[in-house]
Length: 461
Image (cartoon, rainbow, N blue to C red):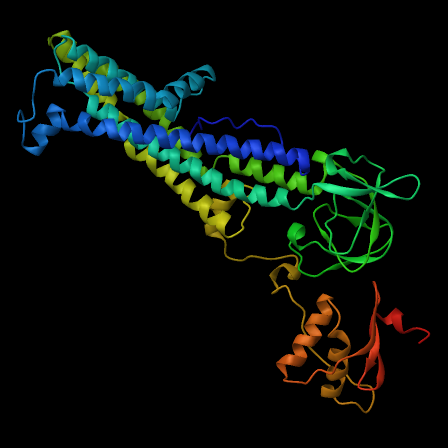
């Protein structure tokens, strides 16, 4: 749609505890707007049914003209239409005012103009002016447009779930290292640049920084999409929200709040959700020209009938008819429906859309080139080749390696054990198992001393 009636000018999301609260407020606002449109829609459709059934034009179309007439039916139709006009049509009336203030008439102007003309003229007819009422057009137009906005808001809510999941990656507290070497638990929002925090194995990095002491492997898959754990040592950068692997480390804080990597990703996704697609921009331009056409055609119709010698009331009725019919019901429903379906499907698949226009152009792609193979894997390690430099066979090497790694929680260790199981190899239990953080592991397997790890781990052994 051209102008969303909800406020898109929220403060930027921040990926920490306090800003998680802001994101919660942002989500609550969207939820309130969804509930508001739903409520307006159902009230309008309940009142719209008798409005349509009492309409002389609809009765004539159904072949029951005059059969449902009764004293005061026009006033009942007027009363129900008044509620639908002011309650159901309020978002479009305010949208019309906003667009005119910005000197950018669009869909809201077109809808608002149509319902104002239909309501004002029909009310005048009820109270004495000669002509036909257009209350049924007023009601159906408002109902269809409310349905379109309701679906659009629901799609925004569904996509906002992706933002919530990103914010959930951030822990709410951290262990800050004090001057005397101890630790104190503080809120992540209280951390400042230069603070040092202790991160235990399996814990999340509280915010962006560098490793001040220690060596470990970091799981950054939830942030970068890379399935393989990344080895980090003193001086290496770490991203807030990533998970520490096999050993405790000290991290010196470098970025907080809006400056963090994850916060920038959240902000990017939020802006992408609020951006307009090519279809929406096309609808904007169509609505602008339809508004001009409606006003022009209405004026020409009024002038033409007056010049033809017809009375003003007759000419006015024709002008109103043209202006009401010019407002397209389908355009107001089709565009939000496309946006709702595409956004909801993308969000369910975990796809974060950075640019809606580029996303629409993707249908014309012939070749897709990925720059990182790690994002296209199954996210688990395996054994591709086994090379023996002695008398041991491949199966014997895999048996010893799997026996040693059966006690390790390392992702590569799990891949080795999995390869042995795939070959139906009986995995022996290791003795005196010892994991060396950041290097490898050693143990006695089948009576033999075994070591698995990086090349540097074997020097001097």
